[in-house]
Length: 508
Ligand code: BLA
Image: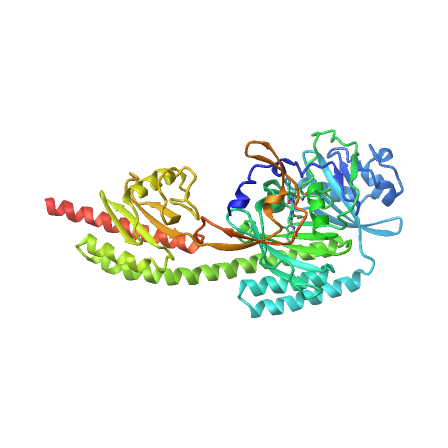
């Protein structure tokens, strides 16, 4: 949507959130030299957990500190390729139970240590019961919305957070809250939109790799690493750690929102970041390592079922569109009269939810539905012909470099028909005036313009409902529209090939 587009370039995207050289205080981090197993870096809070100062730990052989079982643990981590799923090891240290979580990168072996919950049998029983119920409900639903609602409810119980929301990204990375499950039964944000700048690109990149993040207390004091600079690489990549200290901008955002703690999970059907499950607490809330792992597994299960549900929806829509295309195509392939055959395209306007279809074939223009200017179409074609992906270009708004008079036209789906590029088909859509409810006025986030077009953004202070009329946008082109357009193109190309053969035979 237009108001969000302006924020594309901003300071937000530049913050290197993967190398904060600091952690959250819920545990400790040790960075181990991969050959000697000596400690290279330690978080400054080791005294709180182990009773030993960080400076004093530097150079210590880790198995001497935490036990011989560390040797096979570290060996196993090293045998994984980089960025492999971290290894876990429960240990006892001075009569307390901890869990170690280790993985390695160029900076060394990163070992995180967090306390384990005391009542672990009760916990296991509780999680088991929840999962059992969830599996039972899964069998009863094939509806994506219902699936996400069930997951939200369950995650709220398991984490003890007051609210769980499902945040879904659109094509331009703006988001909308589509599910909200709150302890008080209210809906505070459901339906609200948030601009893409709220979750900048580098954060989304990180969230594809690290799929569970928690913030136990939005008011925590970051714990620096000692030394701050990693001896092997300088900036230590903390992407995969769970204790990574988060962006201060995001912490300010949470406080402005009145949220004291969070747990955030990546929804990744088909391996792509589709949305996030965001759990919020009114109070600080420490969710233990086993519970977080449980939440991650549940989210994986939800992602897979979401994938199935989305595919089912897609197949259903394709069947419907396919039927319409077949009805056009059978007579179209059979008739000798190309013009007459093409006339059937007007029956496809409705199924494609389009207002006009324009075709240029063998030097002749054809149009169906609302009237368009052939010269305008040439103009549109020149603006988008070099931007095709997978053989088409589309948008909900006209391209920025479009020189023509748009008249009523807003969204386009452009498909070149022949390799020459002079034969093409365009589906057109009119504007769909839309009321969008934002949480807080998006434009308020701009603090200053640094250089022309580059903004210094800060998190908005208000999350009050703010409604905006969005202009210049059509209905979105969804996956089934695009797939069906591609099928229609094949049909037209086939017909044109047989036409060529016929003409040649005729000439002979
Ligand atoms: C991160 N912003 C995030 C995250 C969420 C949001 C969910 C991920 C936090 C995590 O995974 O732990 C946004 N939170 C929301 C939204 C809702 C919510 C939309 O609860 C809706 C209910 N944020 C801004 C601006 C900037 C910014 C203007 O609003 C930049 C100047 C930055 N957001 C920002 C950064 C992160 C972030 C840098 C990454 C935090 C991190 O993981 O270190």
